[in-house]
Length: 405
Image 1 (spheres, rainbow, N blue to C red):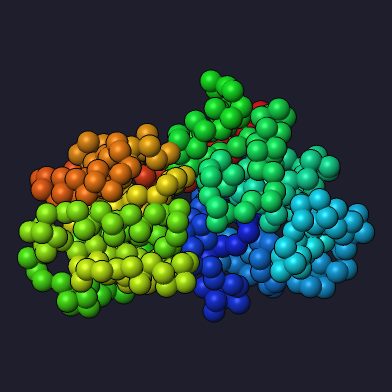
Image 2 (spheres, rainbow, N blue to C red):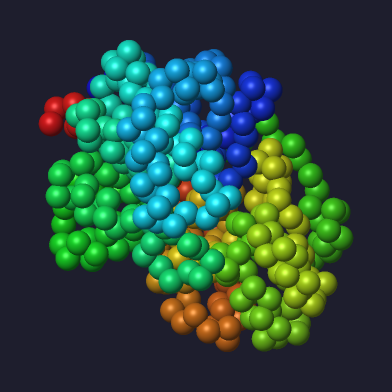
């Protein structure tokens, strides 16, 4: 299979190319998947997004397909408009989301034209959401061959802040019943899907771990100087958008329970957009707990290189790119044993697990990782299991298998 269309919600591309940049982990991961697949001569990669109005251009071997308002309106099909209105009424979509939902559905006339004219052998769809559901249904209706990659699960957890109005589980069940190929980014995610389907195994659900690629344009910054951290103190990173799911606030509570001597010699830096409206930062009560805000990808390497430990305490985590990014710089990881990604990334020489989610248990875990002797070279060697090249090889192999099916 050599002519493949990646359909995504958004992708991190420099704005100088007249294409929107989204700085989330998802946007960067999709960027890395597409651009590294494009390096392989066996496949031709094109990308279309639901989020951007853009002219066609080539970016690192990836053809970013044109999608303009005239393209959408000239190929408008009343059926897709009626479908959008039906979804809006059935799902009680909030008013502020109505324009986007309508746009996603009415774009399908143009998507159909692109797929037919491009003669794509496979449509690779990233995620289940209102961004992608219209295309999933289009592929079903017109018998376009497609696969889906799930970068996480949205509706399998109790999250009061995540109001999921689409029926994710319905589509997962449909994929199983109709043998639609699905890749997921961790064994834990696959395990949850199998439990939901009451299955021990399903051959159309396959794990392809995320891969890490070190930034080529490192913008070095001395973080000890920037945050006034003494040379005899150690640094722990907690990376990810500040949110209830990422659970950074528990680190604040647990830090208070750490022995005073260690507390004075350990700094925890929190990196990521604050989605709490400043509430998180207002709860920081110790000088060694520092909220750094969002850090550009070009500078994130400086933080990994100069730190000692990595912390992931999310309530659930499909994969967590910061885990393997930390390994690449030799950082041991402290995390909870029940996270989905643990089966994929665990190595006793690189990961310390906490079996209890209490504040006291987290405090003990922080002390234990601080006191334990870690071998940086061993951790870096472990990181080689999660390179971007390995991820790309697995996708190429998967495409070949689909071609033979």
